[in-house]
Each structure stands twice: as structure tokens, then as C-alpha cells.
Image (cartoon, rainbow, N blue to C red):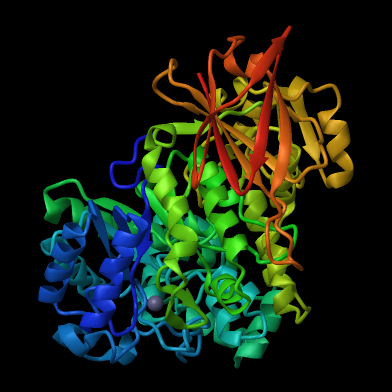
Amino acid sequence: MNTHPFLRKSDVAMSWIPDALETRPVQDEAVAAVRDYHVNVIAWGTDPGYVPAETLISLNQRFKEAGVERIAWCCCLNIMPGKDFEHGGRPRECSDWSRHMVVDFLGQPITLPFWKNELWACANHPGYREFLLRRIKTSLDAGADAINVDNHIQGSWNVLFAVQWGQNPDALVGALGGCFCDACVDGFRRYLVRRFSEHERCDMGIRDVDTFDYRKILRAVASNRSQFIAAYASGELPFIDLYIQYQAENQLAISTCLKEFIVRHAQRQVAYSTNATSLFPNELADAHLVDHFVAETYYLRQPGKIAIVPYKLAEALGKGIATWPVAPDAACIIRESRTDLLRFWIAASYAMGGNMMVPHALYAENVHGGSLSAMDYAPIYHFIRNHKQFFDDYTAMAQVAVLYSNQAQAQQIWNCVQACAEGRAVDSLGMMFTSLHQLSLELTRLNIPFRFAVAGDQWLQHTLQPHELADCQRIFVPEPVCLDSRQKAVLSRFSDKVYPWHSSADTNAILDGLTPWLQLDASKLPVWLLPRRHIKDSTAPIVIHILNAGYDWDENRIPPVTNLTIHMDTAMAGGKMPRNITCLSPGHPPLNLPFYAQSNTVTISIPQLELWNLIVIE
Ligand SMILES: [Zn+2]
């Protein structure tokens, strides 16, 4: 599906989950931000757990009067006992919170490593799930156009947290299938019955599934958390991989339940999205259910690193993606006043088919409300809204394909979990920058247009299709590759153009003999060329997003580039010669660009590049 009725590529989206949102000044600020930035979508509004229903209704109205067309309210799948119930009251069947918490194999609560070490409730518990549905109903009744689910991977499966908070035993126990509450362990019994015959269960040593208590099995191996983690590291936790897979399937079951409720209750089109952060492999079990992602993305705030993979993956899956920087990235921007860096992230997001949300009320270091001056960023968003015809329904043009294997990505993260369990130090930012990220960045820097061809696994429901590979000149496969036999067979049909990639040392070899569609006169310039085409209208102009990627970390600015010359192979445009080329740029009037053609090459001269030029080729 390539259309996004809730989130279109030219939309200017905002997230709004501030503290003290009931106070008039906070609301007034948000409405002012909508007007300043020309926001037309609230992609992540607050959760009805925090406000009375009537406030939600009046906020809906105020935002829409200010120009917002569509609003998503949030459903957060973790509960901070106390705060969430100040307005909604505590439902009777949820009154005994100790029975609903995410717990370890000893029954001790597992806290949220990223949120003030709070407890959280288990969405596998039917009572808590009912409570979530009531909150969604409140949002729907208040006129929600979408429901955005936060923490959709729930307490049962926070693999990533284990790596980020490797020294935190709560994070590791959570990653290894925790929660182990009554509801989870009962469900595991039913899972074993569903998945294995009696004979198979006997072979596994499970004679009587009715009395099978997984916690007892684990307690026979370990009597405290450090023993539990050590037993995992040495491969002595029985059935742990199965239990983790069971919890992954629970995540899908939770999303299915929420989405079905929305369809049933709303009786109108209501979109469904998840906060899938950087679209990590363990967050995609329900990807086929979401209409778009609203993602707290890791921009990795280090020289030479940036988020590219989430945009490429979302586009390959046919989903929109509204992003905002994770708290440590936002804190870096605010604390160090890195205005140009954030401007670059915003421009790069739209140039790659995403919608980075406006930096109003950023969430930084456990504090909502880090706001930056709209004057610094609003012109970029106005530029996008003024030229929406060159964003909506456009997709990346691709000379080559890069194989995305969900299993390979997952394996690289699990290697880090293993390292954490063994007590080894893990560089969490480095861990996120896998070989796939390195290859994506290298191709972007070299201006080789590419797209992902996606191979799913037991988590991500997507099967590699021949048409994802057929029209690309080469297929780059980051190693190590993990594919099931069916997808391996699809890839092998194109074996004459498959190139394995292990590290940067392979880059020259894999590009040898390839005539790039786009080339800069000065190839060392930090300028990215990202061509896009309309997916429905073959007569619509091709566009090339030209980004100045020369952000200087020491100087904290992007030096402008002058007198840029680009050579475009007409093969990129199906052999057609351009009639007219226009340069659009934030803060500048449109400019007709001089160009000349010689055999199959069109040479385009661009006088100046500040942050971002959009070249329209007719
Ligand atoms: Zn549970």
C-alpha cells in the first residue's frame, strides 16, 4: 500500500505529550506551535490516561481550528500506577495492581529502565487489556483519526533495552522473555499445546502440560537474577528461545486485539500506528497491521552517523514514518544548541520519504517540553507545505537494491544481549549501527540511489519478492546474511547481480563497472543526491533532493557550497531529455537552472546550496 490517508509525505506532524497539559498556557503554546510551523497532523497526541475525556474533546477542537487536519491520540502500553488514574479512576477489575505488573521469574517486579525505573503493567493480562481498550474508546469517542500505540513491544520483550541498559538487570531479565506473571505463564502452557503435539512435548520433557510451570523450571536453574542471567549466557535456561518467541507472538496478539477493537468500535477509518523507535527487528511483529510508524528514532548524535535505515525500511514496507529524536539525541541538540544538525536531520528525513516532526515540546532526558525556537526550523516546514506536490506519492528511485534481512539484524542485536549477559561492555550506539547501516550510509555518501528489498523472518511478516530485485542493476547483501530457504531461492534467481558486502573495504569492488546515475563534479563534497519519482503519474517531474551533509561538529554549522555541478545519466529518467529544470530551496524564490545535454548525460549547474535544494526536472 503506497497511500497514507493519515500521514502523507508532505505532512507537517507534531507530537504533543507534555507534562501539565491541562493548564491553559501549555495548551496555548501547542496551538501557537501548530500555527508557527503550519502543522497539519498531530501524529502523537496525549494519552487519555492523563486527561479527562472532555479535555480531549476540547483539545481536538482547538487543534482543528488552528489548522490541524488529523489527530492521533496515544495509547501507552505501560502504566505508571497513580498518575494515569488521577482522572480516569481505577477500574475495579484492575484494582489489584500487584497481579498485573510485569514480573521476573521470581515474581519480583521488573521496572522500566527508560522511565524513572517505574513499574509497568502486563498487557497479556486480560483485565489490563480491557482497561487499554476503554482508553482507546475514550480517544475514539473524542474524535481520534488515528491511535498511536507507545511501548507496543510491552514489558515482555524489551530486547533493545537490554543492550542500552546492559548494566541494569531489569532490562536484561525483561529482554529474556520477562514478563513471567500468571497470565504470561498460563498463556505459555496454551502456546505449547497449540504448537507441539503431545508426543513432541514428551520428547521435550513436558509430560503433563497442565501442571507445567515454567517459573518452577527456571527456579530450579537459578535462585536470583544474576544466576538467571549467567545461566542464559551459558545456554542453560531451558526453553528460553521458545519463550521469547512466544512473547513476540504475544506482541502481535496485543496489536491485533487493539486494532480489531478500533475497527469494530470506530465504524470509520481510523489509522493505527506504533512507536517502533528505529524500526528495530524486534519491533516489527505487528508491522503488517500498522498504517504508518510514529517513531522515536535514534539519530545516533555522533559524527559520521545518522538515521537512514528507518526511512528506507518504512518505504520498502509501504508505510509512512513520522519521527522525532530519542531523548538523548534531543538533549544533545538542546544542550549544545546544535541547530544546524537538527535542521539537517529534518531535511534528510523528508528527502528520504519520512516526516520528522516539528521540534516543539521535545522529550529530552525524561522531561517533556524542551522547546526550540520555531524561527530556526519553521521555514523548512513551510517550504515542504508550499511544495507538497513534489513530496506526496513520491518514492526513492533505485539504481541498486540492498537486502534487508530482519533475521540478520535481530542476530546482531542478540549478539549484544549475549555480550551484556556475559558482563562484557557493549557500545550501544555502535551496536545499532550494524553493517546494514554502514552500507546504507556509504551508498548515500557516494550518491548511489538505492532501496531496500525486505526479507522477513519469524517476527516480520514479509516475504522477499522478485519484483523488489528485478529492476535494480545490482543487489548488495550485507553480511552476515540470514534467509530461509524460500527467500534464499528468490535471491538466487538474481545471483548474477548479487554482491556480498562485509565492510567498507568491499565498497570499491561492488561498485566497479557501475555507471552512477548521478555524479558530482567534485566527488569528495559532502553533498547527497536523492532522486525520487511519482509512484502513480509517470508524467510527473522527477525530483532530486540535494542535501548539504557537511555539518561541522566542531564549528556547529553547515558551511554553504557554491557552484555545484551535477551530471545525470538520462537512463535515470528512462532516456528522456529534460525541458526545464527548477531549483527550489527554503527561503529562496524558485530558480531556473542552466543545463546542457551531451549524448546520455545532462549537466546541471547549481549556484548555491545552503541546507537543501529540491531540483524539479520536467
Ligand atoms: Zn505478564
